[in-house]
Length: 293
Image 1 (cartoon, rainbow, N blue to C red):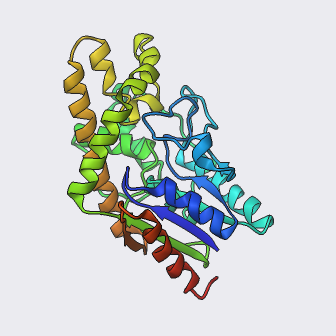
Image 2 (image 1 turned 135 degrees about the vertical axis):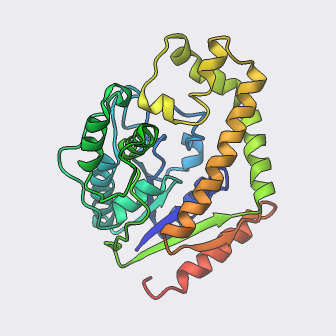
């Protein structure tokens, strides 16, 4: 069996993954594209040593922020971890909100072996943009004369997005997709409160990168990092940056809901934040009732 825990940022996926790993003798595989990077801990809400409770975690902190890591790399690494964990008669438990990573690992999508380097798309001509888009071989329909849309499309592809119109088959027959959800206003409140709580340590975390003007793919992708460059450049106030981060986090959560609802066959569970144990019990009952156990 493989357990996959999905849902928007801040909904409680990490806590659930630890509890299920203890119950089902599992090991956890990261499915968050930002938690791959060492040193990006606060802004990504990365699981702490104490929170792990001795549970083995995989694909966390495996790259430096200046290293390139693509969805192609993740596909290979994640599948290796599935085999490794299963060979020990343990259960792989994926946890994270990066849907493209999960789909690449669990479904029959084939990447070319020669993954492309991240480039400065702005420096390319329209013809070069088209050639690079076509190299992904997705068969996407797009406007070849709209440079702005070409740039946006190539940027999405370079960041590992798989076109949603593609219909892939899951490679594993024993996968359970479990989603955590809650009312939007509750989730947004939790996102806002969590950001306020982590603000001071987050500033300490991101400050060295901003002062040195280090702008790698990881730093310029992750919410809670890229926004602070404007603050340290004296282009925005701290309050403006905080509000931007919260807004971006809320919008990201909304996009995550939309993506998962349209891409995977997920059993959704409403989180009881007053009694999380009750939520766990419902999910355990659901898992135990599946014939694949």
